[in-house]
Length: 484
Image (cartoon, rainbow, N blue to C red; front, side, top):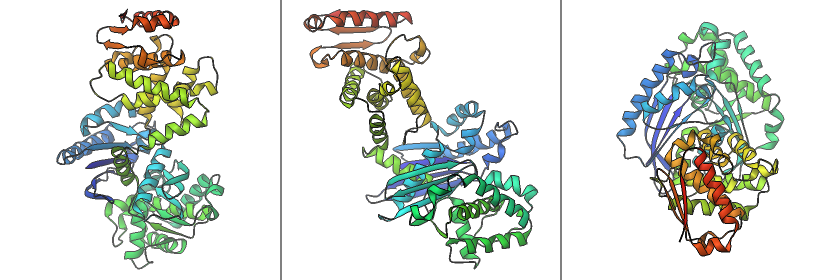
C-alpha cells in the first residue's frame, strides 16, 4: 500500500492506494484547500499565517497516514514551495509535521509525473497525447505516446495568481477575462509551435481545475463535459453574469473552487486559443496518481531513475564499461564498511555510474564538472535533494576532502564517500578488486587490510593509498592500512 501527498498551491491532497494486480486503486483521498499560493508576501516569502495553516494541515495528514499499513510514502511540493524564498526555513518544520521527507520537485518533473498518472490510467493506446495540467502556481504541457514522453514544459502561471491579479476583489467582468486570457496567450506563444495540433492526436486535461470546469459545463447544461472553446465561452459568459466570485452558484462546483475557477478558465481559454486546441477531455488522473505509479514501479524494480542515469551516460559519451566497474566496486566496498541501512546504496551506485561524465567538459577537474552537471541537470525521476546528494558524493570522489568536510560529519555519508573514492582509485588503476582480499572498517577511524601478494603485484597501490591516507588525516580521520 502506498501514499502520495501533493503540497500544491491551491490545495494539499493525499491519496492512499494499493495495486490490485492490474491497476492502482485509491482507498482514501483527502483534500485540504488551504490556498498556500495566496500566502506569499511581496518579498516572495510565505507568511507566518500561511506556514501555520500548512503545518496544521500536515499534522492532520500525518494522522491519516498513520492509520494505514503503508509500504512507501512520497510527499512532493510544487510551485509555491519551489518559489518561496523562505522555503528552506519552512521545510524542517513541515517534515516534522507530516513525519516524512518532502521533495520539492521541478516543474518538468511535475509534468512527467502528471503524464505518468494519465498514461497509466488510460487504456493502452498508440495515440499521441497532449496533456495539460493547470495548477495553482504553474501549468504543465506534456506530449507523449503510451508511457513515453516526447516533450514536457512547465509555465509559471496558475489559478491563484491569475485570479488575484485580474479579478481584483473577486469582481468578474468581460474586461478582466479578456486581460487574463491575453496575458496567458503571451506566456505560451513562444512554445506554441511545439504543441500545435499536428504534433498530437488527442488532448487531455488532468488537473482538478479542468475536471471542475468539465463538471460545471455538464451539470449546468452547457455541454457534455468536453472542454471546447464554445462550451468554455458559454461558461465564461455565465460567470460574468454572476458579477462576483461570492455570487457564483453552479451545480457541481464546490464553494472553495469558485475563488480560483475564473483564473483556471482564463488560462484554459488562453492556452486553447494559442495552441489551436479545439477540444479537450478531462481525465481523473494526474500528479498524485503519477506518484503512486512511480512508487509501485520502484517497488517492482522498474525504477525510471535507472533509465535516466543510463540516458545521461550515453548523452555525454561516458565509458560505460568503466562506469559499471566503478559502480560495482563502490557497492562492494560500501557493503564491507557495514552501513546501518541502505539509504545510500542506490545513490552511491548511480554516482559511480555517472562519476566522470564531466570529462565531456574538461579532463582537468572533471569531478567538479560532473558534480555541477548532476546537481543542475534535468534527471527524470530524481528529486533536487537526491541530485544534490549524488553531486556531493561525486565531488568527493578524488582530491582533498575539505570541500565536503561538513557532509562527512554524517557517518553513513562518510562510508559512501570512502567506498566511491576507493572504487575510483582501484578501477582507474585497472586493479581487480576480487584479488585484493580487502577487509574494510570505518568507525572512529578507517581500517583497510589488503593481501600483501596483491600489493606486491601492483606497485602503485602503496603510493595511491598513502595519498588517500593523507587526505583523510587532513580532516581529522585516521586511516590505518595493513597487509596480510
